[in-house]
Length: 171
Image (cartoon, rainbow, N blue to C red; front, side, top):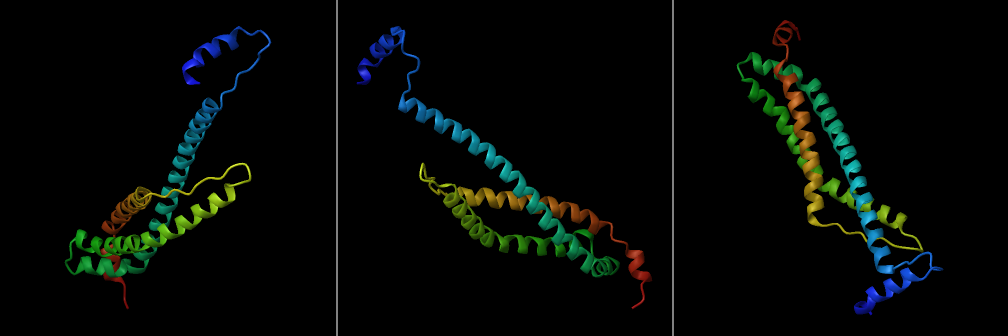
């Protein structure tokens, strides 16, 4: 009876032999608070790692594309194209690949989360898999931010292409 809870606690505090009072509702609430704190820390670490991995993948892709197409891009600069026009060729390619990879990443991420939830479940407790649409938005935002950062770094390299070396090369 919650209306007489205060009287019960007063009587229990006055009892000298009583060492511990455990309330299920309070214990459950504190357990949930601790789990939520741990979950937010874990999510933060995973998001940071995902951002680093996404940056590395996009940056590697951009560097490889630049090394393959660098000569053609420098030739376009020699022919009179502006830096931003030449940059847009590679940056558009990065954007298309990044956007096309999003649904594949969503699917693989969902499958990974499902597998993790299954492996964490035990006889003692089970965890539900809750994936709301905002999870997909946040994950895409991390990947797009990493792609933009990679694109900015590669853009600087495109702007520094050696046009003189292209003119001196014989085919």
